[in-house]
Length: 249
Image (cartoon, rainbow, N blue to C red):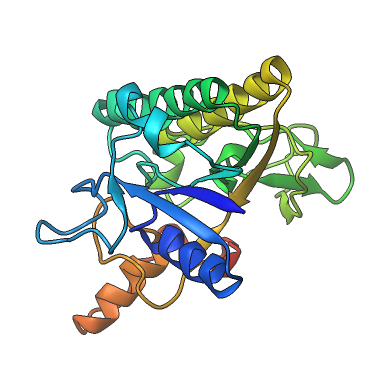
């Protein structure tokens, strides 16, 4: 089996490449070494193709003889400002669409897509009396006043966290989240139109050896680690009572 792995020089991509190699699966790695994810002196791992996922001219050769594509390349993070919208749309959405078109031309019909738990928005909340409730938007005035808990729209009692299953409705609330939802929709449309199959992995907060340093696009675990290394307390937003899942890579 030959697997084309995008983002193979990244944190998750590198771990996947090693795991596949341990199973004697041939990996064709591609990466663009984006400055948002890699230091200026980063070098491509041996055998890795330097390819921007948005460039349609590179996919014909890269996809030749490929059985499965594992698409991990992405601009990550919560969306630092609204000014980042074009970057998320270009790299994540246009890049995925360009890859899918290349897969169709090459006759590759199996895809594993890196998505994210951010597609669920704020998660799920429940009232002890009235059950699951839609998650309202957060208002800056409430956050500035230290009001972090949602309240039931029926009885005004504080809502509690509830488990989120994969069938929960998507509710993107950042540029990054919107781009991941769009990636999933493009992949689903491709599967239906081209007769392909796709599995989307909605990662939660990832951590582990080799995780990226503290940048605006790092995950919270990397930011906590970097703060501790500097001898500073990790910066925790709100009141620290919020729950997150962490996935070891």
